Image 1 (spheres, helix red, strand yellow):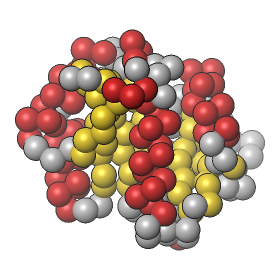
Image 2 (cartoon, helix red, strand yellow):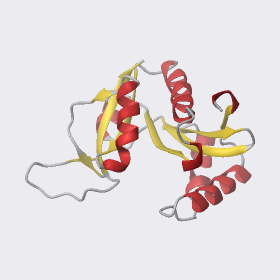
Image 3 (tube, one colour):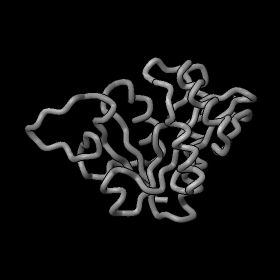
Image 4 (cartoon, helix red, strand yellow):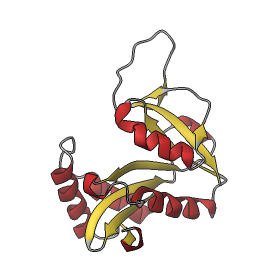
Length: 171
């Protein structure tokens, strides 16, 4: 299946609608709305690159490259962020995420010295954690964050999708 992977940049309103509908049908946690319309606007502004992955004619997932991360350490050090990687379950284990990462790393290397990403800490993120470290991403040394704010020792935080460690890779 690897040879059938095609990446396409989000560029049309109809594609934003397609993403919204596909994510709603594949993931129970996703709620339809204007998220992909906002992503399209940011793609047009040049602040975000959204890559859609297709296997043949079927949408298999998507991911974003944020030129300006919301994570303060990345902002301060001019590190773009790979963000919100999602591959639909039936397409996983087919090198789709790696293909997306190859392209984002190639794009980022044209303008940046490093690239980064955040990863969740509970078991659902285990495959992502392994993939990122196998690709050469290392901890940024800033500790855990919750909603992009440093976790303070002794203070409770919720273990959910907002509890992250950030990793970086030199390009």
